[in-house]
Length: 359
Image 1 (tube, rainbow, N blue to C red):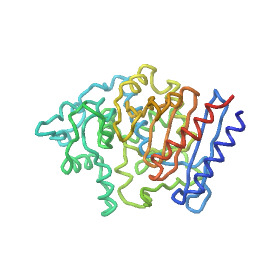
Image 2: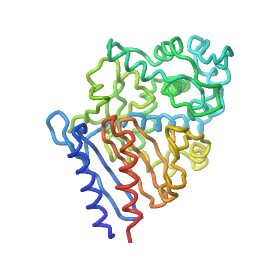
Image 3: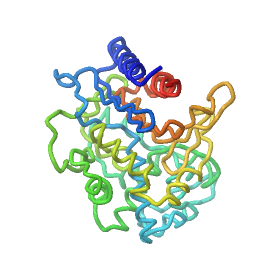
Image 4: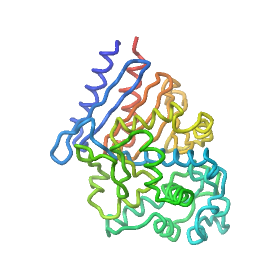
């Protein structure tokens, strides 16, 4: 297939998926590949009675964790912290007190920044339990309060450094570490180190900051089991450093290209973030997790080598991924939790596979 045929096919299949699925209110797809010459930025659906627009800011859930990891990486390179530092060096006594007690042994002092980034601290995930709580009884809660609330209700899943256990709790703690090291709120560090240098003028952290320049389009709505979290008091605050970034597709692309082009982090830093990883387990076969980086590896019959790529994933069917084999950057967001698995299949079969078949 030639470039034009591939582009038309990708656009057509994307629009068909969104139009056919009643759960999808809006969706966004950007594909950028200098190597193949494919450049697409499209939107489908509606928000607040208006047609979805390619320049519309949208939230990508846990994709925001990659932004957090990048800020930590920058602070590591500046010598303000180390990936291998114990987190007790930066967090107050109230947070650290019996934070990680597993089978009668307190491992709190053993948790490092690396463990948080790699999701290997063993701490339980406070996020979904807290979402359920807030949905029933809306109320604001700070990230620190959320961690303390969680440690009093949930037990750790494993000793630090033993295995991958995905939890937003780790990223709440990373956000608080950034605040301790920089002496400023996490959102200000995010703007200072990422948004401002990359010219992401419409980007902001939901519930905490505003964009440098307002967009002419409303922020796209997204849904968790049919509920729009934007209508629930307190939801934005608990997302925090675990996934609170809102930006346009082009701005998410700018961030990913800055990473792959080593303009945010040095090559050796990104290499460590990619390669210091762990298998994600039976729920995500074929994935390994680095420092907020989901890395697709070869799985015979299930995941051919040609699909190897890396990036970050959000529960709303959001993918910010780079496919080295075709030098393709993908920003994909279906804005609904029902697409957290379907989005991967769409990206690989309907975007990457056609590009691989180009002449």
